[in-house]
Length: 298
Image (cartoon, rainbow, N blue to C red; front, side, top):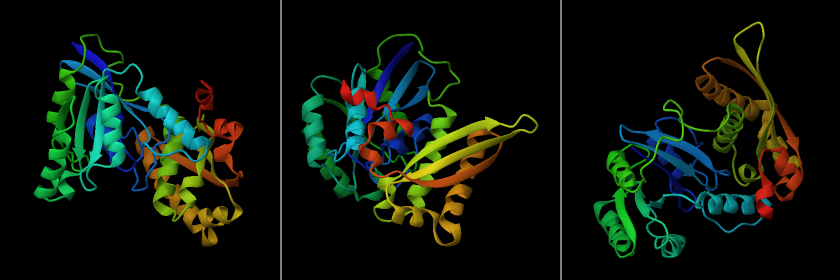
């Protein structure tokens, strides 16, 4: 039996969260077309006949501009510690970026790295081969596997390459467990995901979600969930609510559907919009929204 930890890393929008969901076969990370959607380390667990691979999804590598950005980059650094392997995701539609070269040069010599060349379905064969040629020139990379996380293509060969790098050991989690995230955490992430899809321009980067209550009713099999969507400006609050409350209603409706699928029960979701100025630069407010900012001081 083999078991080990694998850190998933890459630049924003490379498809890391889509890939971990496809590998696990369950939704463990929210997905949107916006960069920097993932803000925390998220665990996804894959069990095979001969191994247990624990994937750590991390935020996209970027230049931090506030404390939230620092927290995200600290999550990447923390995710890389003491892992058995790194699964580095490259976006085939954009080709090799400066940050891709820098990451591989910095880490491939010290920890085994497998590259997933994602979005192979979105590029021509010539474009794919051009990027493969550049990746093949990177020394110390253990394997390069073209995949389509969105379509679930070529995932078995990718898992096979990763399994080769796992050390011998017993499973670290029960066989029926696919993530260590709590339902409260996932509820906040699902609400934020729906807001990301429905909001425009700069607003999504300044929103967070705080779960105020999450409980099953005593008399009926219904979850009551009360949550705040937090934004930084009054003008943003108006955008989140929308004309006649339409945008907020759409966010709640879309989130409730996913929450009922996650819990297996009917969900009564109440959403409010609160303004907390510059919360992304406040340790106190970030902690309120569930970000463990004490890690920034280490």
